[in-house]
Amino acid sequence: MHVMIFLGLIVPLYSGVLTNDPGNMNNNIDNTDNKNYEKITLGAGCFWCVEAIFERLEGVKEVVSGYSGGKIANPTYREVTSGRTGHAEVIQVTYDPEAIPLEKLLEIFFLTHDPTTLNRQGADVGTQYRSAIFYHTEQQKKIAAEVKESLEKEKIWPDPVVTEITPFTAFYMAEDYHQEYFRNNPEQAYCRMVITPKIEKFKKVFEEYLR
Image (tube, rainbow, N blue to C red):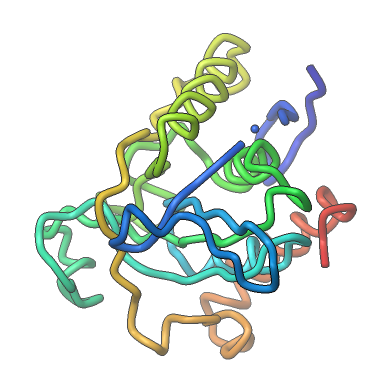
């Protein structure tokens, strides 16, 4: 197993597969442009950060910020940040598995956040910032569990991996101003202090997978 240091963490390089969709479990394949696109829903802290990383990957067609895993329909950002709805901030990624398989997407997911901190990423604290993989198929569940188990056996981190692996039920698109937030607000304080340094490290490590 190859190991590298990323964002201050020592982590292994894996290879992983498969996906689904927002609110409609029957629509996990998109034949746009004669390609069979697939979907995966991921939570790794603030969705501004996660979106900024995944939209830079070759083979990714679309990244949408939103909310999953909660108890009410159509939650607002204010409701989600209260921590009372149970939703996580997530991104839903539509990608071409022939260009970038789910193995690689999950590798990047684990390598670009800390999967050992419960309900927290850096200064962002609350269940809405939990590490989570919302699987759309049994194949996705299997792969996610295998990657998580491998990390735990290797004891890459001093603490156990707490990433939630749970069935996808619904995805609610976040408000328009959250979409492509980093691209549209690069000079905002959070973007400059948190997202920009993370993006620069990401680009160096995963250069071969960038657009």
